[in-house]
Image 1 (cartoon, helix red, strand yellow):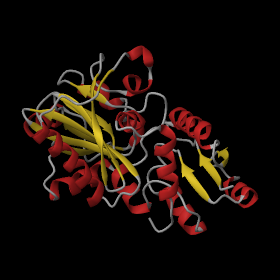
Image 2 (cartoon, helix red, strand yellow):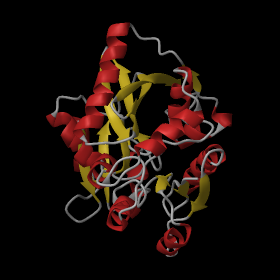
Image 3 (spheres, helix red, strand yellow):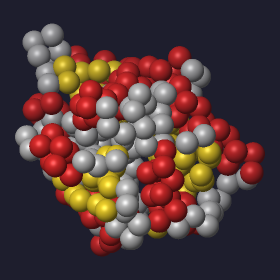
Image 4 (cartoon, helix red, strand yellow):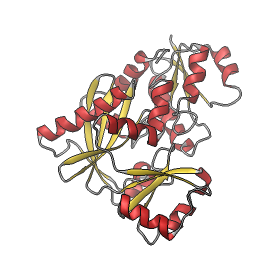
Length: 305
């Protein structure tokens, strides 16, 4: 029987979601494989040598698990693993680098600036005026390399300084134009356009709670209510983004649809596999069970990704 070591947990702010993903993945995969869930700690290499897995299922989210770090370790150990490789994971996790690549490849993304909490960029009235001129309010501020909408704030001219102070721990952040409109998420599986889903959060935007809490009552709309031409357009944009970043396996791209245009907010190389996660929901709508989805991901595992 093939053995799979499932990496879950980690030290990022998305630890809880990662553990939920690992738990759900383990429940399903243990039907056909010998599985074990493992934390990516100092005992990881020892556990790999003891368990001797045929492959690693990467269920980590956030920094160190989604940014090329763990991928580089697995490449060095020459152990097959799932999802994207070192470079594509790093690029997708870094919101500045990925947006620059999107722009170069004619994919619309919100206008942005990088902000550093140092002496060169002081939070002042002059700075706020610069933001107003370049981006216009409201704006979105967020860390450059976090996921799951961790520490994301929509800011007006009045509360920008207050919210910026909350992100000082990150040293560098991204400030981008707020795009109103509809939330459209697209799943890609290998070279296949799996499908799209629309989200209607009851909250101000699709934040951490809207993503992972049933009490948030976010409405999931399948099929997406778009004319075929526009649906094809957003599916093709997601596949294009997946390809230009060099992604592998499954990805999910987050779009805003505003004034008949799609804006790519970011691409996620490690989409969640929890009970509320979107990729399994899109797959199920297409007639692909959770087991079949995970089995595809497992069979796609390799090194040199």
